[in-house]
Image (cartoon, one colour):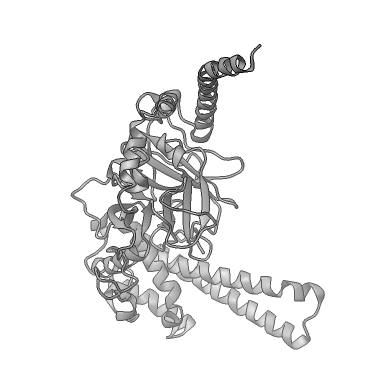
Amino acid sequence: MDPIETISQHIQAAPIIAAITLALLTIHYGVVWLLNQRKSTNVSDVETHEYGTEGGLIADMMKAGSGSNDLEQREAKERENPPTSLRIIPQVPIRTDVAYNSWFGGHPYLPEEANWPVAPNDHMHFLAQINCADIHPHVWGGAGPRKGWLVVFLSESWPPKPLIIYTQTLGKPRSAPTPSDKLQQWFEPKMETGLVYQPVSPRWPVQFGVHTMGMDDPFDWQQDNAITGLARPDPRTAIPFDISQPHFRPFDWASTLHILKFIKTQKQAQRTAFVDRNAMKLKSNTMNPEQLAQYNQTVTQMDSQLSKFQMLLDTAHNQAQSKPFTDTELEASFGLISFFFGESFFQDNQHDYLRAMYEYCKHLYTQAPNSLPDTHRPYYESLWAYDARREIGALGNIPRGNIDLFIGQDSDDVVLLELPSSAMMGWVWAENRDLVITMKRSDLRHSYFGNLGLHLTT
């Protein structure tokens, strides 16, 4: 056959071969995507089919191949705008006259057909639920859904793994099938501290604000800038600790018991740490007689303190069952503490004491803001307002710290969600860093959240 004729036949056949190849690849990857989506989210067929844009993933891929994809046209137009992120800020004060559709912590709202995600020998901890309708059009360069909700989970074991359920139905509050009983570093404080023990973080409604790259952040109070002015001082430094001030004192039997149990728990932890530090010396008999005597004396003193604290707890518990709470009863309990442990006990233990009050008031406030007394609410709202501006989350743009992945306006990797270490939420991401969830822009375009990356800022 004439070489020119052979080449001509191949050229004529190329479009047919290319079309068949594209169709096969499209079907293959579409099926794989649907299977992965079912595996990663544990939702029903109905919910899975809602994950793509109108017409589903395969229809989107065919549109992309034909060059008529509205999503790509929208993204191309959005990339003309400056890179934009959406700041996520805990709402302080919490308003009781409006309904919130996005929040950190608490319980997720899931449709009936969606199951709580599971992981082998692990617990999936709920982090946040984001209303996609509140996501600014410029975020992610226009990619990603603008309706429905992103429900974000994270495994507790190391290395932690993120998981996202994308649902277009808000559903109802859902509790974990088996609440976690682990004391993981990611979710602290997570210890039994009395009547306000919570196996989940507090549910904190969030508000959103748009930040354009290259401009001062109007939501960050940590640094001086042209929009917010000078960095805000921490209100904790403006009001020194004084146990006689009303906002530093328990205000009912529940808060009193909580304070006592919290401090007892911390004392138990200190004893355990002391014994562990000396365990090898005891085992190897490397302590001299003087050191051994000092060790035994310290352990005896710690055990005596714990025994006295337990007696105080029992007394307070009995009083709570039989007597109304009054300042007189509180003074009696505090008087016993000073008698057993010295007048400077509260001052010496103010860190644990203030942390206990912070935790108690935080959980009470997020459950019912008006339940926090007027003597305490203004002070703690000032703390939470300050913390909220230091513990800002974000959708899109580049993370505030460094991660081991290049993120740029034209890169295929995008920051889906950034969450800070947070005293308000009890999140501790490896020495108070930020947790960053990333994904491919091509996946985000089709609302496919089955291939997520997780990074910690440095």
